[in-house]
Length: 423
Image 1 (cartoon, one colour):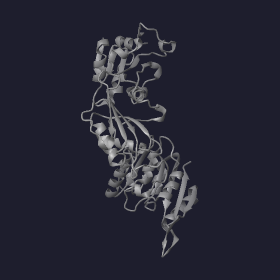
Image 2 (cartoon, one colour):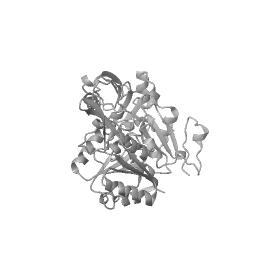
Image 3 (cartoon, one colour):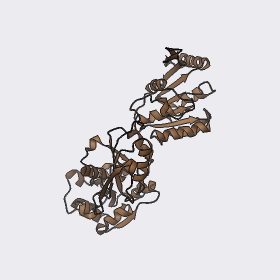
Image 4 (cartoon, rainbow, N blue to C red):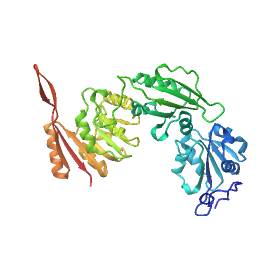
């Protein structure tokens, strides 16, 4: 059992419990820009009692007056941080974090490796809480994002008229780059409030619009508040499956809007799942799969280099830059991919080995959806259903179009869809 942590301020019983079955050797303390002055007596005592204190250089500087043990700045790359902390399991260790350690913080990282019963966590107000307090915004009705070290395109799905967004950026250039993205996509009239060094003596808040952003030097530690206003031509992504074809860059090789909506319904996205989109074309199925929930993952498999590049551009413009793209022909390109929860075959179903590889790769309970347009591919799906079961659906869509001086129905090519759930 690790040594008891002696505190001048008594802890609640559930935190004070320190037994062989539940050794609380790790403390995680949130610290704000006001430094030690903003810390509670418990937080101060945890820092003082620690043999080793981990944190960013800024955090260690803010808490320097309380650190009696060794001060260890985080390693670079940061991916090794949890390993370094775990090397000292059983000693009195303190980790310093910005504000709330479990809101885009180190606490969530460490909790993936360390039982919560081994921790004492003392959070401070997060930058989001401080920003909401300054602006008078309701946090449950505000979109909270972190774009720190992440692609700014992630903001795109949240650009809805009237929305309020709070987001971190990576550095002092982040707010200006974000403003340019908004202006370029039709949200130039959105009001931006840049809140810098919240909670400390350098705190400052300045407001402008995205289209006329001119704030000059911005502190690297900033939070941006966005009040979204959309122009008539703004790129607003509807909250529905089956987005308009015109929103995608494509060369005609795209699962059309109505077919796409039905296909996604058959694929039945569920939180945290992985999709393979084989013969991805414009990537529309994979992109809408990922838009269903921030936890969704997808791999687009496309043999043509120009289409793969187009998928990459589409993924950015829809705010899902995490879409993985594999360039190559199936089934060879499917080798060594992580196990799929769902697979869509939109092109190349008749290629030798593609459907066999897809059925093998699915996890038990996974869904395989294949769309066929040609008679040859349709015959293949009919045979598969006879052998494996599943559902066959024939989709016929017609659009009203001019017919001479009048209007008539012009049918699109019918699509045969096979849905199979792996036993």
